[in-house]
Length: 333
Image: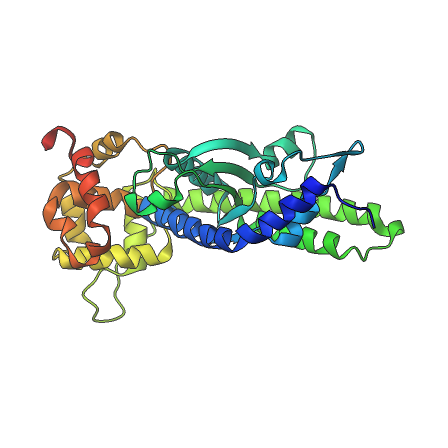
């Protein structure tokens, strides 16, 4: 066994002491990123996080390059000690998440590894990697304790995630005979190409659905709220340039509509017909394409103002809605 330099040994010991705190930081970043995505109305599959294990940190800190340590100061140079992973459905949502994060954090590094692989004329690992930190201009005081902390954020589609997880699992186990390695590489490359094609087809399907007006206003029960599926189809037709939101968000904002006394798509359509929704969106000046639910949320905030803010269903976000009101109304305030 090769004896590690004292600096590596000391760094690993120090990291072992810090790791419990970093686990809490990772959990808090997950909460923050999830809240940002939900507030923006961007569709996603999952948000998870972790603090790098002590064993993984030790392995990375011990790496050698040309017979020299890869890291002179592992504790500061290894930047993925806190990691967050966002999995989306569509490739365009990957870009939307990255743009959202760029508006809320300081981005220290941003690599699109899928694009880098494509520029080399290959198929393979595809994921957007951002290194972000919360600076002194954090908008939400609830996250002030995270100022100065950084996190490595991976953003990928669910198909890219499946490929990466399976490939990593196979490589990590290292049980493939040397004679089969080239064939394994070829098969992984083929699978990556097929999944890239599937990602494109999923996007085409989404575009086709958004371009059409697949609206079914039928109701299967006595619930006075507008059905989530009906509302999703309605908003897809009304905000044709907006992305889909998470399924549960349609049901959530339907509850807010009920609190406002809006219980049918005809009523909602009449309200939207009196509002310059595009002008509201332009005033918000999003760096990312806001989801359909967020677009409706902006309209309701602009029209009803304090009444909307004080709805029971908005009790958890009074501060953020109040901050948005002036911007969403523009010169009307």
